[in-house]
Image (tube, rainbow over all chains, first blue to last red):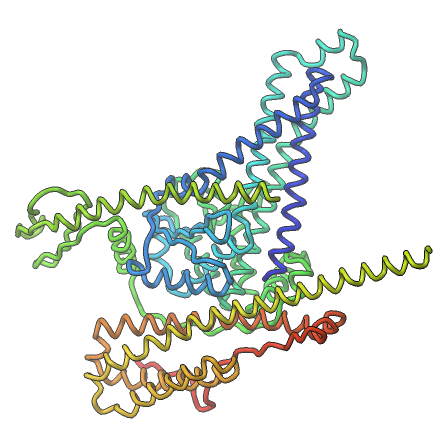
Length: 432
Length: 186
């Protein structure tokens, strides 16, 4: 567990260092290509660009992500089972703090995790996911997300993503600049000589190759971290079949995709943008779902070692977990499946929607005809007529007003939270 | 002169190695302590839920006084064992688990109790707490294993011996031999 984090950290530092090196080199050569004296200016531009992207990502990453996906925070009282499952996985992973729990109103079954530090993280699941999965499967998915947080994938993918982003922008600007000014021609006439021409060629080659290499590296890491999160999920739950069968159900979904930006795709359980079971490619954030299921089902136990063995068996002896990670792992048995209550998907979906409505501070009036009328917060009529039977009901206005007011405060609290997080990151960065 | 310098260098290197090992052992021991605290929280929660459960069930299961008394007895023993280390706690928790599972088998004969909302909520809370105890135990035992391996293997065992780092106890919930997976009939 701790070894996995340590090994991850080391590799992450190496990879981000590599990407940063490429970025700085690109900045230098791009600068020199325009003017032999501009090497330092090029580096400064590259680093400045990186800082701007990082600032944007750190300042609002969590807020932007949760806002764009239309997520709503739920409490223990509103969603006891979901909250319990998250807490179980928090305990199993040894996270220092309970992640916040969010529900997203979307029929596409998916889940994601955010939070740059494990002390301040969140997991979100869609109503579509809650509707389709049983308790064991939901536990598997939550364990996968908590695995991302525990392995520091959230932090790492943000850092790596922003660095690759800076490389892409810089290379693009440089190539366009060369196109317009003609680059080296101007300088060679000034007598810069052959050296400058070589510099310019190096710069162009770098500008063409670096973005591609950066992306390939980034996506390879993203895929590897998906496997790692799967391994962690199996280890936390001691029940790989839960996640495997959840993935199967998610892959079997052929409805509308979720509306998310490319930048946040690596944080989901399965790629929200790709069609189900898409092929292996250098440019995909997630490994093929079918392959992930196969590895999970080939596990002979519930440990990281068992996951590594299963992975090796299916991938021609290729290793997925480092030797140091496995050294501390002990063999554990898979626990038996739990007895599940039979609940239909429609019932589960209704339960999920009820939680969402409760979190959104809707008031529910149970009409004598059996219909349940849901009123949004801030609804300011004195009475409401049942659309089915025509009975009149008094509106619980104080509740709805209180709900609207509470939502307002929640929004303010969230802003404070983000500022707090930013401050922490700042002081952390200065200390190191 | 050179000999003294080499000697000094060796002493400094050894000192640093010892400090590193000592700090590593302290970190692992703290991890074990923290992991145990997690288990403790969940066990306390379990103990707190049981009086409510007994209170709710009392009115419905008048003929099962013995079963309820057994639960209360086992619960009180488990509370007492809480401060007496992992092995004692594991035994008492096992007995409590037995008493509870017997009770839930009995409950099958009382449809009124099974339909009680309060009882259902308590049942979900109890079973989730039991899961949490399980996961906390998993994490704790991993921590204990790492710590014990470190205190036993050379050269850190020398440091462990010097500063009195004792082996930690695993936490196993010992269940009675005759207890089997309860058969649920539909």
